[in-house]
Image 1 (cartoon, rainbow over the protein chains, first blue to last red):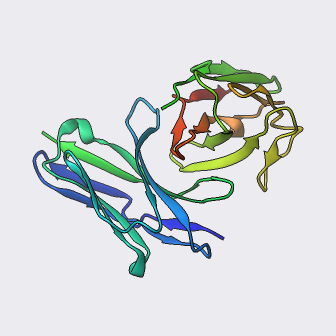
Image 2: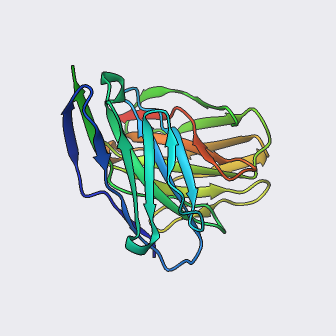
Image 3: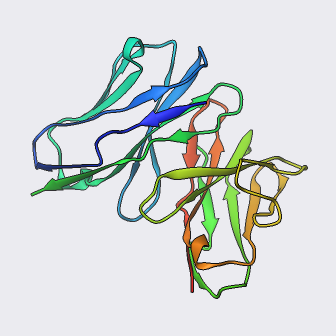
Length: 114
Length: 113
């Protein structure tokens, strides 16, 4: 069975602070995908990144960066110099490479205060 | 990425009625899925919508309650049958692109009175 744990329920920061969201996963599969999604107050789910399990390179996209550590089964997400528009619920998710069914974490609510 | 359109975006329904949610993708995709997000909760997979055949349901979800159709590669519907207040949720359609990304529609926010 697959399981994704996002231990941080809520994080509140002041604008321009960095914020790191933790994601720990469990799977018996040797190959899998990891995802991060953003859900702003409007409710839609915005795709941020997909990472293959065999690619442990860290990735940076603008103010977003991701740190994948297979040894600790973690896929953490950092927002640098946070902005008010970053306020949202962020979900980490896991799927295998056969059926692509997503198992979601509970989500972390990020509030960025001006 | 394939653009996913869902209708209705929101609705308020009476207990005991049924509502059909439509999902249209602007390009052919290999897989389509339906998820439910109950208030304040994470997302749970309802089923995989299979083109031209019966959907594959996850544990806890049954066809009589959530009938799904997928007549072609770009369109799917989810019906929430005999609704109760416990069915109040956001229902989201998802597709998988040929490059393996999984995108979501904007969701259909359903309130059952």
